Length: 306
Image (spheres, rainbow, N blue to C red):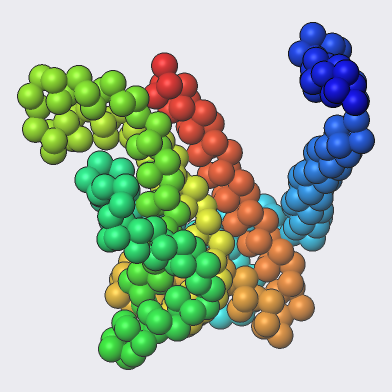
């Protein structure tokens, strides 16, 4: 028994020079890995396919209403038909104003989280949680909030209320995207500024922000494209249909989402065709904004990463 124990102790439990052999555990891991990989590919294909189906359906249904007059003319004072020029301009004003409200606030929040807060800051953790919660708030809830905050005080719908509602929707997107871009700025730039004795605020204004500016603009464009298609908050705060633009930001302003809703609900038999045409125009504007933002982000990432 002693010799057997000695022989057993002399035999190594594992020989590092022996070739690796597949085991049941390895085969199970490979199977799970392949299953997750193909599941991810299938999910991506479903997403792309759904977008293609929606885009094709919108193009097919709205093609009959699309022409140059539909884009550059206003609807008549009485009767159906006409173009959507005022709705396009009104949507651009409302969404751009919302972006101008949300972008500075979002960038300042990102600067605080990246440049000023400590990793264990309770304020920073609470702020991140707030941004995450804001991203999950339904758009109609934001519309009802702005309805009570602004519309009930003004006693009328307004483009200003619509811009505020869209700014609330855009704010967490701008803050999160700006935070990610600021984290991509090489730490060596900050260390070089500190070594030269540059004040922190001057370093941020002259070094960090210029380096990350393209990425910040990309995030703002993506947030703008996200908010441009929102219908629920605009129906709540700027739902009064006005076919002609008055450039009164504190009064009702025409916009494409409300115009689509109005055309689809009207008694006009051509209303559905007009609604599909407006949906096609809005979809193309959103797609162009997203593609442009992705290209700008790829350019800014190459610039930041060197």
